[in-house]
Length: 185
Image (tube, rainbow, N blue to C red; front, side):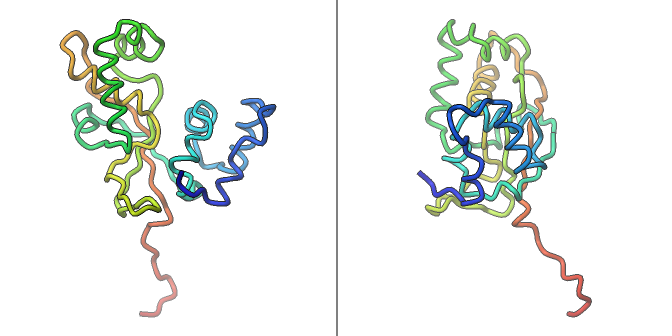
């Protein structure tokens, strides 16, 4: 498990008795710049995974823009740390009717896109995990099943992927160049 920043440890549920609503209120107070949809998808729906896999990043420095990307761009550029499982989920969608009939599979087959945007980190500054492993330029933070199923839609003649898809593009402001405004050279 990756180390979790002390400030991010405050984002964990305080107890199993904390309701989703209470948890969202607390998350909003600590991460007011996060879109509500992101808080619900990443933290509430996925439990501690947001902290286990990426808690070493300072979430207070995240900034979000909602963008629409073409299918080909997504499939070519967005990479996950979990490609092996994603390949498995892509294959499951293509081969198993029960996966095709579950909520996410059925939605994507019927609509050609996902029900909510995944999170993609724009890693223009070459962030690396604490272990030294690099993250890809466009690194998938959240939405692994959705991207895997999009790959399945695009690869299977039975279905048609929509031409574009909405994502949350995430930048990490701690790595933006600082401008010297002091007037000295």
